[in-house]
Amino acid sequence: MTDTSSDETKRQDTANWAEPIVSLQVSRVPTGSLNLNVEGRQVVGPLQGFGQLWQKTFRLSLLDSALTPVEVMQIWKTNFPRFQPPQNRFFPVTGIEPGQIVLINASATGMPLSTGVMVLYADDESFTLMTPQGHPESGWVTFSTFSEEECTICQVQTISRANDPLYELGFRLFASRTQDRIWTHVLDALAAYLHEQELATNAPEAQTRREGKTGKFTLPVQSSKICLDPRVQWSEAKNIWSNAALRTVFYALSTPIRWLMRRLNRTKASQ
Image (cartoon, rainbow, N blue to C red; front, side, top):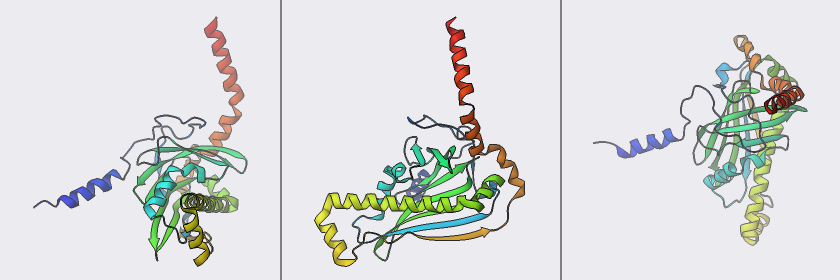
């Protein structure tokens, strides 16, 4: 006798994963974004990174919210770019779906950075992004929602290494703290948006529930960091050749040359 329910579960789980690929392909470039350091790159995990391996977890508890984890995750996916800090512009090519690309045009301490991520996994309560070659980190970041003691929890968890020696130096000096602020901002922005939505859809009841019990909508973001491997992988120092930050800077500096070449080509074509 065939276990049809088990087969159906396996098919659904398979559909939640991105299909194996050789290299990333961007089907279209959203308006306002720059497709640089993504097309043709391979995705990389912690095994391909250079620096120390860290696991970072950021959690936020939604107090007295009527929204289920599934409902919160749907809102998170749909509005994912708007929860990023102003210096991080995220451009989902089609959406948060397995195998899809999210282009990233950011500013790191005043320096431009053009990169992206691939949606490795996505289901009703979570999604995981995987980094390409040249990204500041090699690894995964998972966004999830779940219930704990009748409270909906929103979580961001990263497992990654700095991609090359230059990035590792940056993370040890300042970039690790900058990253912590980014994920804290994402959770705070998500909570603020959910708060506004609940007030807009059910203002009297939502306000009474909060004032009568806790007076708050969320608890402060809680964070934890664990160094899973303090060693660096010198065999991966060559990753600096693909460094997206350096390549973005060189691309920006060469803008006048590209403009001049295009102008010369148009002049030749018109003759």
